[in-house]
Amino acid sequence: MTVDPNDRGALEPTIGELVRDLASETTTLVRQEVLLAKVEMADKARIAVRDAGQIAAGGAIAHAGFLIVLASIVVALADAMPVWAAALIVGVVALVGGLLLARAGMLRMKRIDLMPQESAQSLKEDKLWLKEQVR
Image (cartoon, rainbow, N blue to C red; front, side, top):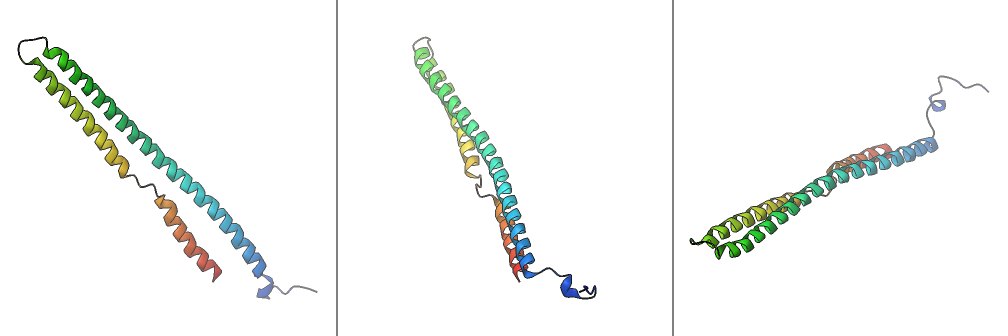
């Protein structure tokens, strides 16, 4: 028996082939989405680590300010003018500076959106695509 080249049915894929192709493409798509989500989360983690470093630096500066306040107590006993007041002012300024630095890092860290937005949008698009393929 010969195949008629004008017979369109012989050239079109079967339903089984279409389902197999769809399953294969869906598997590939899910793998790519998982990879995208991993990359996106790694970027967000890198930013969080940087901000955590800023919080730690703020804490260290605040600690140094506390040590200056302690030193001001010692200096207060030394000179004629109320040196303790001057040292106390320096210590308070250092404390405030450290607290502001730590607060800025915490505020930036709160703004980090942990949801992988690109992956979520891509999954929505994939869902629409899959619906179109099933029709």
